[in-house]
Image (cartoon, rainbow, N blue to C red; front, side, top):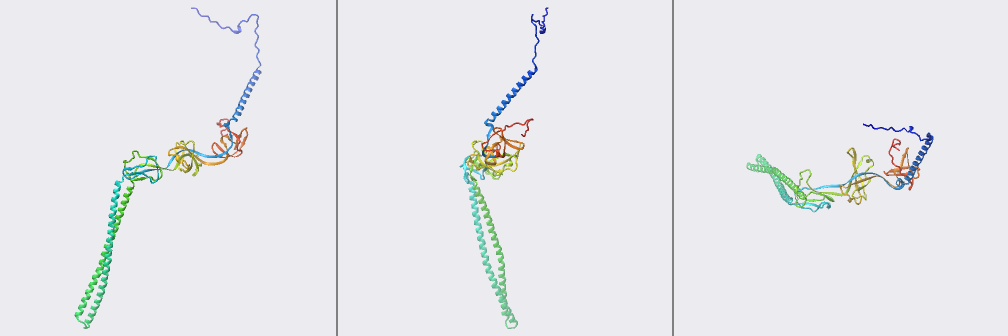
Length: 456
């Protein structure tokens, strides 16, 4: 087997030179030249970067988006929150009577007036109960009149009898006294032997008879007390009859009220916001007045005389909210306009949802077109805490605070100290330091780094 032959590379140093030529040593350049070249390159790079930076800054200074003009306008400090339109009040219309529906002149979404008929039930059963109650009242009235008549008759009889027996008693007493005196004189005459025994006995008999008649007359007077008790009984009969009449009258009123329950009217102006399914003529309604609900709900009337919007205000913004403050309401249905409103209620107890505490604030829409807003619409409520009219304003982004001083940068780079007033969020009121029409540059928002203080 023949092994391959490996040729070793030639060492360039050991290469033979051409005949007649002599190899010259290479000459190195000085190091300072490389240093000069490097410095020149770095200088050119820095100059180019500086020119580009200043050119970009100059271009940025001329960019309209970063230059603002001091203007005079109306400035507001506001609190914004999501809101929902509520109805002023919703009333469930219920039937307190039972029976089939006889009339149903309204339908869902109809506008109704106060006192307008909403539903009428068949009143046959209730009318029959009223007729029976009226009959009972008539009978009770007759019994009362009869009791009064019996009392008056007994009273008259008592007075007549009392007059008679008292007169008879007086007459009997006078007669008895007269005859007793006569008998006493006859006894004296007999004792003096001036009169006869017969005359005395006759006089004594007449006196005894008269005294007996007086006793009888006195007994008749005493018997009047029994008639007086009977008269009191007649008087109690009147009281009993009056009580029965009152009870029957109450029952009549109850039945008449029950008859009135068959006619259901609207309690106020509003719209029919809901109607029980399948409600119509012939629908049987159960009263259910014995339950807590107090009757069967057949429809709901919504009062839209006031339009209320409920907003949830964060606890950090609640401090500036007060009753009576003006507000604006914007809803998704009308994005091109806002509705004037006013704060009418601030909840005293907040709601904690996912560790976020909010307070309910209600505003009433006072706009002339408030009826365009319907319950359950959603939108934004803007509460105006403060308002300044015809004041100088500058964008908040143009203001810089440093070392307890406030200033803005005018176009050209000059720092101008200013005194600020009401903070409106995007814009702030300028009390001094600027004039209307001045041009200021907006400050770019920079995130804090380890090289820059975060409060600058």
